[in-house]
Every structure is written in structure tokens, then in C-alpha cells.
Image 1 (tube, rainbow, N blue to C red):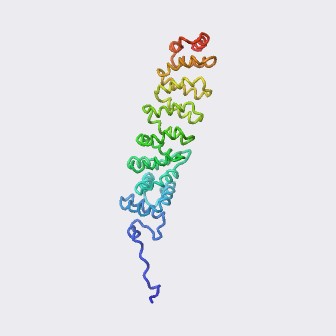
Image 2: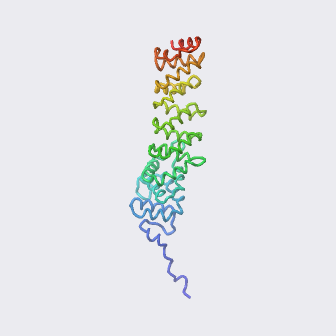
Length: 316
């Protein structure tokens, strides 16, 4: 019987032999595999093969990639710009069809106060525009979950890509209408770029003008103050006299200024309802927006005598 010590060592796995030029060690350490992928991506050779071969450890590879992007570039094993490294990481996800770890990558490179990583934000934007048929359905799936990912919404809002927002329009509208807190706000901010042309998006913002949540309300008012949307001007007049917050009153004034013509009719209706201090506030607002002469023309002919007197005194 042959002595076991005289037997030749077992042959290296075929995949390791093939990838020797990428300097993979025999124990196939995930970090070594990651850098082999980066090297292959940079060289433009063998990248897809590596991604496919090691899809089984995709979570580890994505975690390593995110960790490396937080490290100083001088510590990288491969000489590569941080922006290109982020694109390499997102390319792994796309090429390997690793949709189940895309959210992990985006979440690991997102901070609540600062938002998305700039490098990954660029990679994400390019990844969608170049691979819409792959990345798009993943995003729709993530945003249709019971609790849509705040991090994914942060990337969508941060990219500012109209094509992306139009693709996700239905999902973003649903989130803006039904969610609360940061998810709702991010969806609203993303949808802003569809104003003023998209009437359904415009209606959503108008509905939020008197929302109970202060942040949501502020986003709605600040956004609408930038655009000419007659219905927004009408609602601004109707809620102005009931708004207790001076900051919000200023924003309502800006919306009315932006929609003077659309708001005229609503002033007449508001004068019919307003009395006392409310009438004074409404008259002062009309004068500020239309001038004394123009404001006087807004007072309805059928306004009761006492109410007319109050309105005229407010206008001056």
C-alpha cells in the first residue's frame, strides 16, 4: 500500500486555476474574490464569469463592497477611483441579477441626515438608465412593500432623473398619499419634477396643503409656491384665514401671488364666509396681492352690509 505521504497534493479547483491572474488565494476568501472581481471589471475581462460563479456569496460580496467604499482609496488593493468602484459594485448586482441584495447595498451606503453616498448615487442613476428592464422591476417591488424602503426612496429622490420618476410614478404617488414621515416626504420630493404638467401629482400636493403633519404640509406649500397651478391658488385662499402659523401664511401668500387669476373667484367666496378678524385678514391679503383698487373689486355685490363694511375697512 502506498504511503499517504507520497501521494501528490490534490489539484486546485478549476475555477481557481482559471482565475489565477486575479491572484485568488486557495482558500477563496470573499474579500479576495471581491478584489478579483474589481480587477476583472477594471480590465474588462472575466467580470461576468466571476459574478456568476460567486453569486452564492453575493451578500458577503456586497457587504465587503460597501465597507470598502467607506475606506480611504489608498488602502484599495486595486488602483481604482471610488466612483468607478461604486459602479463596479452596482454592476455586480445588475450582471448577476442580484436583485435581492440591491436594497442592502443602497442601505449600507445611506445616512439618514446626509442621504445617499455620492458615488453610489451616481452608480445607481447610471445603473437604472443603462439597465432599466432589470433594475426597474426591482425598484417597483421594493416600493410596493408594506413598508417601502426609505433608503431606496432617498436614492430615487437624490438622482433627480425624470425618466426614473415617471417609471415609478404610480408607486411614488401611492407612498405620498398613504405613508407618513420620511418615506412620504421623499416620495413627494421625487414627484415634484412632474409639476406643473401632471394634474394628478398636482392634486396630491394640493391635498397636502392642510395636512396634519407639519413636515408634509411644509413640503407641499414650499413646492406649490414655485408653480402656477390655479387650483393651488384657490385652496390657498380658502384656508388662509384659518391658518394659525405665520410661516405657513407667508407660503400661502406666495402660492396666491403665483396664481392671482385663478384665486380671484375664491376671494369672493371667502368674503361671504369671513367675519370679524377673518374678514380683516382676508381684506388685507387681497390688498397685498391685487392692490387697493383690485382688491375692492373682489368683494361680492351680495355681501351683507356689515360684512361689506368690514371687508372695505380691511382693504382701506
